[in-house]
Image (tube, rainbow, N blue to C red; front, top):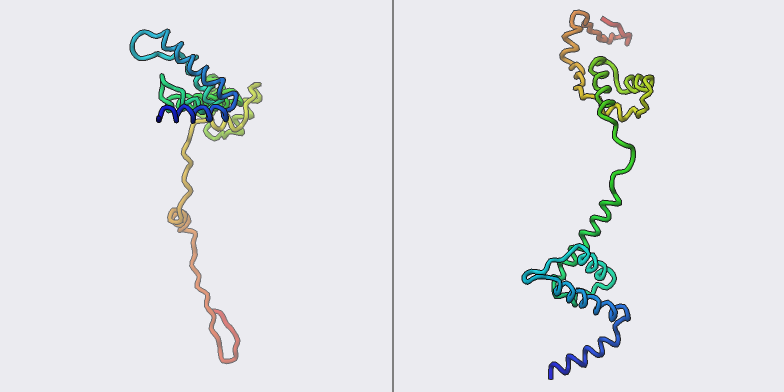
Length: 183
């Protein structure tokens, strides 16, 4: 009785399915048979083309997961996600200016070490005179890092200028006639 009821329900479901769904389900089932026939006994080994077909079928018709027998539905979803990540990693690959050659980077470092008072603008200007076109920001990134000399503290300022400091007190004395005099 339950079997007959399920058969009747499946007939009604088939009437409301789209034409694409009716065409894709036999493709999915046929591909599973092909994979099983070409395998030796044991666990089926899927090629990358098999995975690609499953991912494409899932992308076109997500209900293909119901027709899967060889792999878990979560596996196909994971393949789809990996493909999506791979695609966007490929689309987001580094573009822009090419890296500078190691010879130019070494030249920048030698110039900077030989002339410690030169900053990136000066080294950049010297490189332009040599015919090497490179941005000033790139020169600054390629220069060796030097810690900045800390600015003096108030204590060291006062110790350095102590002999030259004079102390003077000025105060106002008010008188009875409201005249101010300074002492």
